[in-house]
Length: 336
Length: 301
Image 1 (spheres, chains in turn purple, red):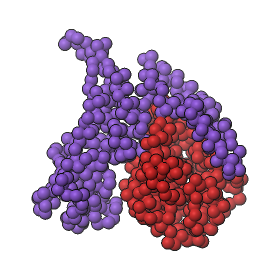
Image 2: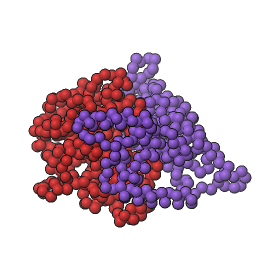
Image 3: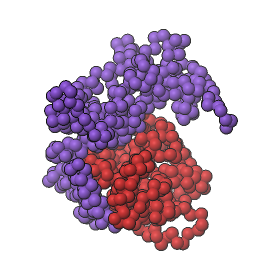
Image 4: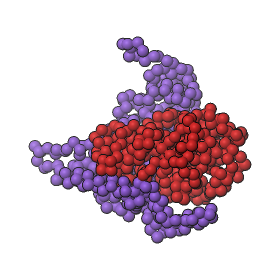
């Protein structure tokens, strides 16, 4: 490399940009238009769409505003991956797929209004049910104007990373559970609720816990696609795990999901492993016996001896020590 | 079952060794998978040395009670491989995801790694963060390599129409592995093409099989499984192949229920990648224990 040069090598590639078009009520179904475009180093998806609109087809419809990855309005999918059009460059994607073409489609899991523009009202409705605002805790927020509500650095750290969320909906578009169940609230919704629930100045956590459970907190499948697409790296799927912990700690323990969590942890502490043969009863109560008997019958059919005991790798003592030590640390933190 | 420790001593120099972390689907009722894996890897000169003293990775569920506990447990698991001086290999995509996530978080946060090491110090264990993580896909496509694999194929699968399925946990998020593009991975298709099979693209290829929703929400899980299968079926494939043992469990084991719930009464054989590699390398359906499948594998290979 020569010194002093900071400009990357300029490259350009004549590419085929496939864009999904659809005007409900006018077109019978979505279809694709192909636009030839010279894609250059540094060109964003949004720049490409604007160029197409300017030079080739002024009827192409998409949403965009700030061009700075902060307004969250330009989310589309490029080769299936949800991205902010304004902060995603096209050339690396073209090179990654090596086909000389990319496919741009609107966000998934939302109704299309026209071309790349979707109706985001379903997300907003789900979000509204989660009370995504601070309800003040009088113990932390003083009445007198001259007094401040001070927060420790650790308290701030517990939700600071989530304040970066710009509600762009990339996670909602990528979400496997929303796709399978349109009533599921989606990653950003739970993340926003958690952001306020864990805030030391807030006093509405119990209501949000229940709202989250009602909107499918335990239906997240942890496919981790939301983490992959989030342009602000807020890691929604990790936050969903934290939100689940919160609901269990707050006393919502009569769900299959919370029973699974408690069983896994208790088993791993005791055996170093989950006692899988007995899991159906641990999670579903006596209803689980049918599943256990079916599993045992299938093993017998293949000439294997069914067991109801965990198979143990010899790490169990280490696991028990870790849990004991972690409990000590976490209780110490709570007292602080 | 063969004993990996004794095998390791009697091998030639170019044999590759891995510290093997079994996860829950390679033991107990599923011990056959370990057996299959060993037979297949033996063909390509790979030996698996079991990590002694391993603990369940928790499949991301420990985090729902304590993130710190999960990090400590999985740092301890990785430390096991570090002591052996071998790359850490788990064939389970979820174990891979959880442990890789742990490695990344500890690498980003020195304070957290110190805290974890303090917990482990009582046992005299230290996690240094130097271990390399790998998965069946990368051992076959990168370490063994496609050239060598091609040499071992004795029964090429020419004409076999296959729908390949990675599952989520070797792909998401993007930095969970550094072996290939997570947006456009090719390792699975590369291996399948070396075996002679034809890979078909289908619209649910990047979907999620729903395995990890099975306990908290069985209905949702079945919907997801059914949708993956229907997408592959549309391409008239002979079978599906997945590199993830948990996806295999859902796509094969739950298939009858999932398709009944969707009112789509068809059958689509699903193979776990090492099974198909084994078949192409001349092992019999009995060696690969195909009779354990819920959906019969009637395709004659």
